[in-house]
Image: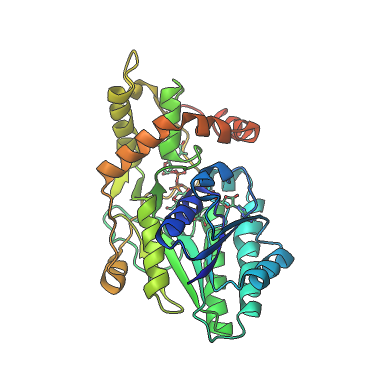
Length: 354
Ligand code: NAD
Ligand code: DAU
């Protein structure tokens, strides 16, 4: 039986992970520490909130006292650190929160775990959930990112994640903390906050708003269904050795414009309007420092841990579309006043490219 501290468990991937874990390992203890920023929603956890092993704690990962108390009260043996500011565009508008949560927050968790885990008799693990964005941008024909690819972050978000990954590594090398790091590609699926590309396209299409595509729309991302990320983290917790790093990805590269068109085509069938939703596509000023291409080489996940994604893009995107269509009220509730201000700042002055 494991005793997990899951941070950021009310966000997109964290809430999917908490549900995944409780359904799969109902005897485990899962303590979810989340500051409930604009991106955190307890509604995403309704399905498991009364599960016997589950506890939600509102709190900040930069709050050392709070984190220490949880380690002591709950005899935590496993940390899965999802808590982060996660949106690149927000990091460009205001990097402060990214430095605080992503760097100082991770530092606080590392210090607390090092202090709490003096007795190494138990099987303890600190898993840092990181991103492929730390590796920077790939040329069109360059091989996909392996675990030994040099870090070259280009946005305040990815720089803050890179910094936290380095701290995690250093706490292993210096203090012997049993850490694991996963660098994952773009996730999609239920409960993703509608500021990110896929849900933003779905909702703008249904609401008849312009669908903003940055630059020429030819940037490439490697998309993974969120449940597959959860099973990947599970595999790393079971089979990874302290200090290991694993790249997790879908082997599923798409140009942004092709994803946007695919979603529009499918919505034309599922929710036909007067014209095609593709008529709403609007090319707008590019994201500064916009990485051209990400691609993950997940060979180590497959070879060492026997992991591979269970969903292909066709089934994953269909499940995602169906989920958003059935949960438009969730989308309305999470897009609070704060989100409306952000949307105006991000897109209000963005010049359409003719
Ligand atoms: P998200 O923005 O949806 O959720 C982040 C969660 O962290 C929210 O619940 C928020 O309330 C919480 N949080 C923020 N600051 C906090 C703080 N100081 N203390 C406690 N809780 C805090 O993010 P996500 O997309 O679910 O990403 C989760 C993690 O996975 C992040 O670390 C991100 O870097 C990483 N990641 C994301 C993707 C992706 O495609 N979304 C891919 C690879 C890695
Ligand atoms: O690669 C993993 C990363 O994926 C995670 O670390 C991040 O937390 C997560 O947000 C995601 O980052 P991206 O910047 O790739 O995701 P986003 O959904 O913001 O954008 C995907 C692509 O779509 C990117 O090339 C920018 C483009 N885009 C995005 C938005 C929001 C647009 O063209 N228009 C938009 O309005």
